[in-house]
Image (cartoon, rainbow, N blue to C red; front, side, top):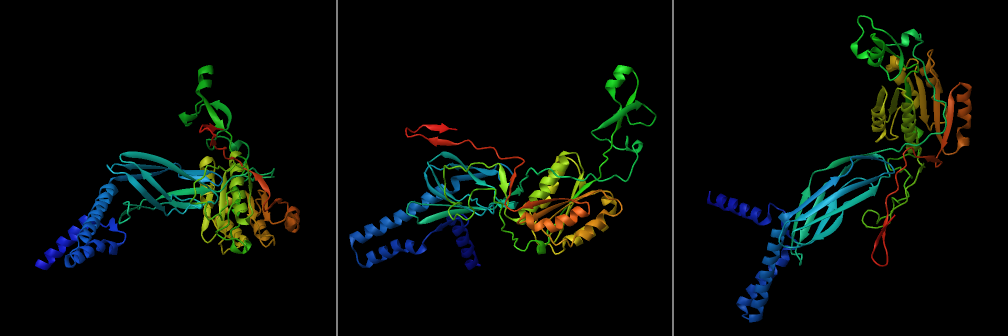
Length: 467
């Protein structure tokens, strides 16, 4: 019992001295120098040895107190200014450092474990006593995906680096980098069919943004459809009739089969940015140079080009008021049921943000399974196929999808050279399928080009000049 009590007492004392393990000596053997000199001075009583031994012990005690008083009084916070961005945007993070101690912070080393490419919060900062300090870190988003910001390890020490106080911020935040959107060339986007409904049946089935006409109120009509301006003008209850969408749903089928992308890899990078991803100093240096914003994208990866085309085609169709859906398979089925509006675009981009060319099913099988499982939704729908597979093995499945309710089809082909797709383009044209070939590396104008950042420079006289 007595031994256990001593053990518990020593454990509590050790936790108190080390602040629960955050304060540690950097080189424990160096702390033995003072006691060793004092022991030598006892057997060889030279006054100089006593002075050196006591001086070293006093120095170690002062440095311990320095770190013990400074470490717990350092407050560090980081704030991610936006939790999502698109390739080509700049991601920024705000940092706040407060030194509440009465002693200056000589240095604080930050080691960041963020996974965002070409970004790190690694830095060494200093602060005077009772000082509040702010700064920002930023990165140019060059690769789509879902990334984490953090965790962060911070450490500080004394002037002689005898002791170090370190702690770890376990909190992480997620940032989503969506693929960019580009302006597509004029395309013959098929409209699809709605099962041959007559014009009279297309009125007042569902509420839509388009009002087809007015009629007098009949018992059973919902009050929400009363057109009050006409009621006030004619003193009669009038009901709005809505025009229904004549076009069918528009499905985008993206080929993510590994066999279609023989050179694809998860490390494929969008070459939109002029920033070099291979610069070993890019993540650790601080510079006043700002890259010039670009208003076009040049994609050298077949996978990235196909994904950008899928998102851009969805944005174009949704802007026209179409109901757009997505079907792809890269090992797991990425299915987005047809819908309208801006939220639908973000659903589709969310399904594409981490897609990779790792699918086992070829495009033909994806088309067959998609049509078999969604026969009701796909009947009469328009279809767009995006693929780099130029062998044409998926053409019978495309014809089977359309079936007897032909709603039209569009094929966007991805090729290293336009001439490589001429044979399959001719076969598609003969089948009545509109075709467009996109060549790797060809410039495509961005739908939302990034705004140029404000620049600043220091004149020879020390004046800040903006613009």
